[in-house]
Length: 100
Image 1 (cartoon, rainbow, N blue to C red):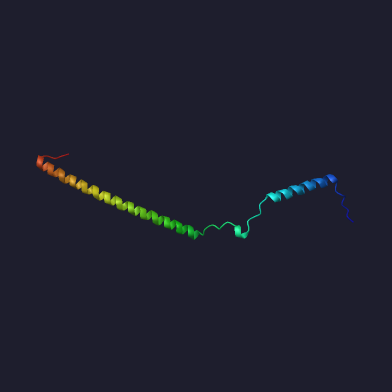
Image 2: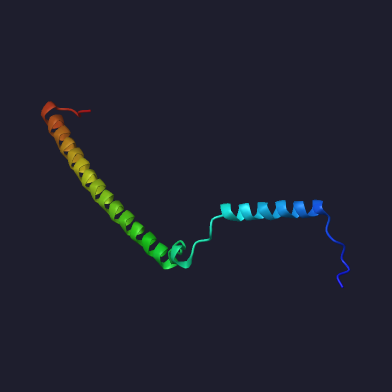
C-alpha cells in the first residue's frame, strides 16, 4: 500500500544528524521568559510629561534665582558708579577742574 521506496541508509544517517543538531540547538536556546519574568512595560507618556514638567520647573526656579543675583549685582554696581560720580564731582569742585 505504501508506494514510496524505502529510504536509503545514508539518508537515514543524515536525518539522524539533522535531528541531533536540532535537539542540541534547542537545548542551548534559553526558554522565553514567562509572564512573571517579562520586562516592565515602558512608562506611560504622562509619566514622561510629568518628569519633563518637573525638570522645567526646577530650571525656571534656578533661572529666577540667577536673575535675582544678577539684579542684586547690578544694583551694587550702579550704587558704586553713583558714589564714584559724586566723588568725582567733589574732587572737581575742590580742585577746580574735572577729574578723569
